[in-house]
Every structure is written in structure tokens, then in C-alpha cells.
Length: 105
Image (cartoon, rainbow, N blue to C red; front, side, top):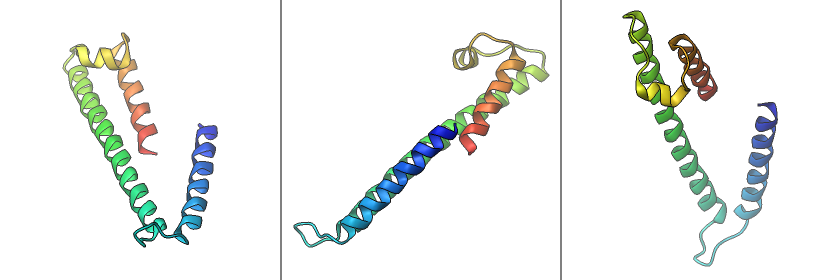
């Protein structure tokens, strides 16, 4: 996890340096390349954030469903088993909670 964070920080630093260099340049239409790149990066960030939010919402719904079934004495759904593997409901709930914590960081 720490290595991944370090890698992402290095990549971000490299992108920022590239943007700084290109911000001093202009494309053939006279537009500022730095502004264009910043807009493109912002759009990609929005897309990734939306994907992450969708995953969080899906996992939260799944967790809610499992906790509700567990409180009623039921068993895991097929979708839950496919997502978390064939384990007990308690194990699956804990796995989902851990995954949600990871995504919230």
C-alpha cells in the first residue's frame, strides 16, 4: 500500500512538472497547452472519482443487504458470493467493510 502511494505521488509530481513546462508553450491555435492539459487531467479525475463512487455505492448496498439478511437469519445472495467468494456471511461482511475503508481513503 505504501509503495502504491509512493508511486502515485511520483506520477503526480511528474505530471505537474510536465504541465508546468507545457504551460509555457502554445499549441498551433495559440491556446495555452498547460490549460488544455489541466482540463484534461481534471476530466480524468472526475471520471475516476465517479467510478470509485459507483463502486463504493455498490459495495455499500451489498453490505447493507448482507447485514439485513444476517439480522434476519438468512444467507448470502448469489451476487455477494460471487463478489466475496464462498465464505460465511460474517466473513463476507468484514471483507466488504475492509474494501469500503480502502476505497474511502
